Image (cartoon, rainbow, N blue to C red):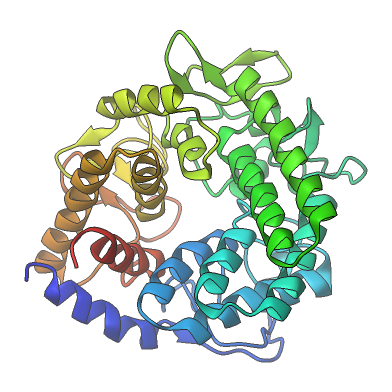
Length: 382
């Protein structure tokens, strides 16, 4: 089997990337449960927020449910202690978050564990994060800014650090003015957050809260359709609310409406037709072609974004496209693994090799790369 060497490597790496830091130490905030860090190099002892979702996707499909559940509880612990799920468990990151995937992690674990008491506790944390952080209008780092939609904005309230909160650090997508944009990926995540909460409370028998969050999601969907969808381009774009105009910058963020499930069938077809802007022989570039791009731009491809796009396509019935892209990505990972003996944080999908080091040294053995490799393999090829 052509992926067996990679799968054996990943099984070994789970143990090497699992850390336990039960008490605060130096710059790190202690966490009650063991967790998978992105790498054992510069990110050792770090549990990142959005990385955790993609890592948990792989852990659940690898049968490591207790580890996955513990990682969700670690994020809940951070929220209960600090009133924020920070980008990672370092003290100097307590004023910045990352794309909100908390309910998606809860959903992954609950789908197997079916523990309603646990679900109730996690739903309460999710409500607190949604209302207290992403939909706040009172804090200095105001997120809810225009027609019921939110932006990225950390406690420094600068364009650059808001871009860090987006996880896309850095990208040409925001033209250096991240605070001015309503991001299509963020608000799609918040839509899924609201529909997840509606589903959770339906499971828990709270019809009032279930209806409340379903209505919230529907209102968000109306606003997103108005601002993010381009009928002329047949694709989803960010919206500059300061200038009240839609961006024309193409990125894989435009596939988040498919992953979150708020795109219409016609819109999903339009997004599918736009694959040609990103697809290469080795996977998906994260953005349209740019000159002298940042690490989240062309020609780089990222494992987490491949999961979002592939699962979005699959959700709308485009299974052949989903499988084709998944196979290209797995083949690229396997090719570079054969050359280097390792899996890596990101890849150059145009030249079919390693990405260049940029903001920091390119990391090997990477948590979400391992996880998404396992998840895509099990989804399409097992």
